[in-house]
Image 1 (cartoon, rainbow, N blue to C red):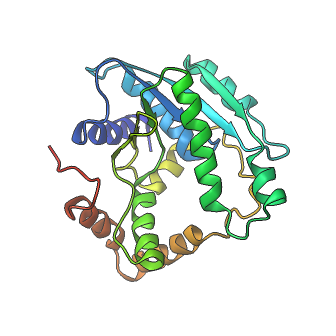
Image 2 (cartoon, rainbow, N blue to C red):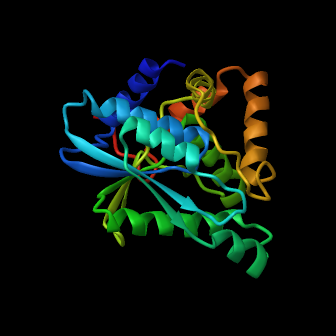
Image 3 (cartoon, rainbow, N blue to C red):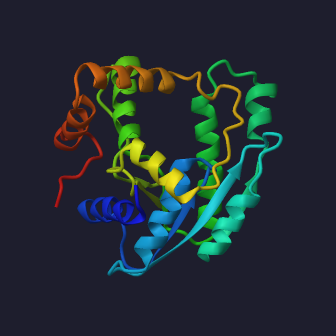
Length: 240
């Protein structure tokens, strides 16, 4: 996928759900994975021509894994002229050593988001951009259905009243395969996940299942996404 196509997807999502307002200051959570780095490029490109003026900066929450490196991410942010902050934490130690969590993902996500939110507020941000793409939304719906017995997935825009922050998801129209294509085309400086359970989670199981379903019933992933947009789910505003 070329940058122009990424910007087209991003512009449509931002316009459809009014994600960006005049003078917003947005924090991008950068994990070092392909999705968050693609989002960095997307907002950097959008900023140049979007009619509403906004600023943004990049923040990485360092979970404390040994050998996690941010030098290449910092170099990319420097090339793009984007302010970059690394927040050191001991989240990995708490989860895997002190608590020895058997199902660590939920607590890790909660602690990671908490650190990101606090830093965003300290830096004067009013919004946080997450890099959830189209496949993430579909997988989350299936996880909610299978494991919680409800129909729920990430919403395009979510207001966090306790923090007075708004979460936006500008990549929600981008298929994961296109993110992978963009990663290869741009040679993004992706940092491999150092999490001990990476690739062995419930989300990974759902990802494999969805891949098989889409082979057996071509187009089912897209139809599920259409159902999400048209399903009047909680937190999903009607399209303007």
